[in-house]
Length: 162
Image 1 (spheres, rainbow, N blue to C red):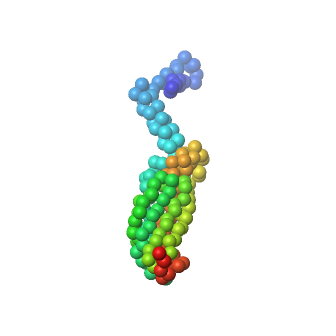
Image 2: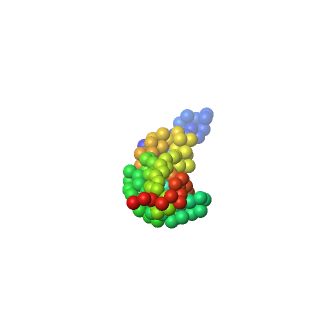
Image 3: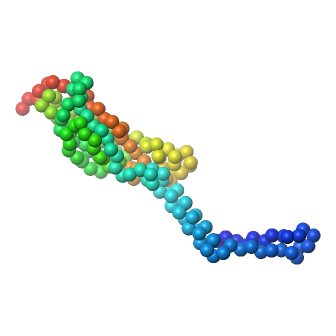
């Protein structure tokens, strides 16, 4: 609680002491601001700033040229099938993103895209908020995949035999 403050008005006369006490409204406002600051600190910067999903542009390349292919992106929080080139929305996760693509021009190809720390999470580390940084990592919101993923197909132009 906010304490009463006593001020000595006249150094020569110790009997002249004024007492100042904050109003109940001021105390309530102070407590609420303190609790809001604590809650923000405990949730972590990235958990407050970042969305749970991230947009990623995925394309497959055949001899340097973008080609259409059917792909599947998967991490611990979900899976989706799409045709490249495309911008996909994936759930942020501490686990990497596995993308597998197939087309008649090349053999099935799989790439592994690791998740790395997001810039927003660095604020927690710099400010000493290790609890907040831990929350960011555990929730996945402090992690990010590259915004552009180019899948170069080494077996390009090799027809898949069925």
